[in-house]
Length: 104
Length: 394
Image (cartoon, rainbow over all chains, first blue to last red; front, side):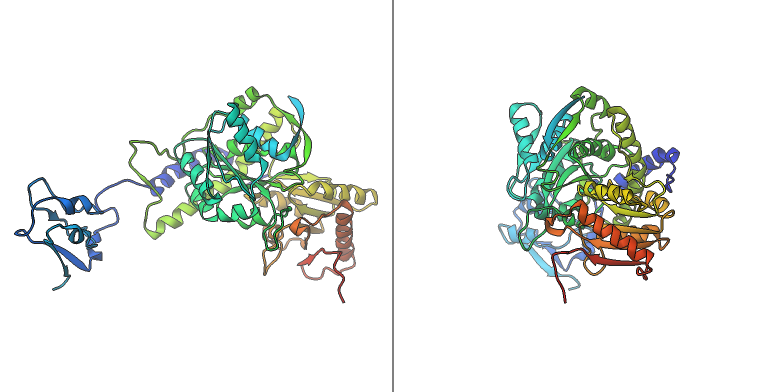
């Protein structure tokens, strides 16, 4: 009995579909695959370079991996992707990170 | 090929063993069935080399086999009634990921009141998720369908999960002779699973179904839609191949019974089809030109087959064991849309909650339907009636 799909084309169509399906279903880690998420931010973490003891705890805790840090160096926040969750400010042992309202 | 007398539950477990399933997960308590007990024994005895994961809920059972299937394993789980409803969320994740999970659903009523007997409300309630859904009508067919489920679901042209529904007690706990193929024959017919559509493994960096643009949700559903359309062809092909190889007479999306020269058709699915066939035989002896169509699959819905058969009859009677409240019987609703007003359709709801429907009951229903049609009493082109002879009204 006839179906809208003819058997001859099934294999080719199915493989094309499968490739496109998998491409859309799976996502690979990449910077900003959801766009510049920094635009979601309401409060901005600002690091006080005088108070900061370069311990790297903020870098360790950042859930979005947007703090760049190397041992004994000042951490730098990537504001293009930082969503402003404030975890870095919370975990900072010397209270060197202030959350500042955007636009102020 | 040897003939063994098996319970429906055992037959499904045998099929799982012969299919070489690698991961099984199940919630072991009510409403579970003996299917998973038999499999647990097989794994324990070393007859089936598989990981058996016991979990705390059906939701988790399906989640476990979802993950295992994503890693490329051939998997199986089984449930029933409320357990299936508890899986509902995961049903969609499995379908939307196009993983060829196979699950046996022993159909049983949904409460309240508590009721462990068979109707089709559980399996038919989940029909929109993207699972292929087959209904067995004998113990042997439950065995066959479970094996075919792996070939169909894992076929590159399909890649969808498959549910094999078998009626609670009338199939699951009833012993019938089953013609069992040799395991080596089955292995020859069913190749090992290819790790498609994707394979999760250590070292592969990707997420499945991460947050995405809205359009992606719609496109993914469209691919499932197309896979489901292709599944019609693949089910016909695979079941015909199986029938040739293992000497079975029934294959395809439907089974026709005395449909040649029929002027009236009865349409239904599941174990009670056998009782309805007896009624059709009796009515044929009395001169009624009636035939029967048993749906072997309700998803994908056999639109082409039904449209062709319905075009040559006067009227169709759909007997449903599940209701879509506010509309009509579930299968009737699908059939009405498939035949698109080309034929008069009557729908009878019967056997809910496992109420016994005998061949004589079917005879009464079918006779009433034919008489109504011939007297002109079926004035609207479809309507629904509840068959409850024990209820006296007025």
